[in-house]
Length: 279
Image (cartoon, rainbow, N blue to C red):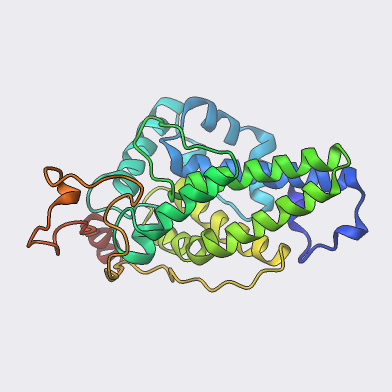
């Protein structure tokens, strides 16, 4: 798997179909490994897979160096510690949710949410409910989607369908430019600063380096609009509700409340206090 991180701006004409298939599956595996960081608290299976000698060696070759809080902890204690850290970072008020709408507009369920939902629908995907309610523009979902597109691209190559492979590669590029390319690198910087546990710090580092590498590999030019900001100014609301659904005045989204400053307000107090304490 480490071999896929050796080059930049790959010229596919220099590689055989078999090599491109292996490279696509390897990249998809890294996408899924990173997606697992954000979708839910690490499961026993996930942690055992990461702490396997093969995966640890691969991660080390990619610059990931965990502290003893990850490498030396017994699995039950590690799982409990990571569940608490996951909640602080991503779930409870005061954290830094890995959601594109939040990172770019300071609000939930804004334009990126509806754009990604439509992108998934057009590609035949639907976000299934998991342990936690999840937004379509959540980072783990975006990375999982890209992994699926890469696997489809590899399958097209194996079937000798070059046209479909080219089409899917264009879709991967388009999705990167329109969504994770705008915010994943900056968010990775914030996660490295905000994480108290080395697992999330190092996975933030991997996210940043892998995103930078993928953007180079795909030959893309996309600015990081996130910038690793702790506080994101609230943009003008583009969507407060699903434009495909009727608005009911009895629900919060249908109310024209006077306290709009509190509605959709993103609380980052826990992370802010943590970073101030680290100075």
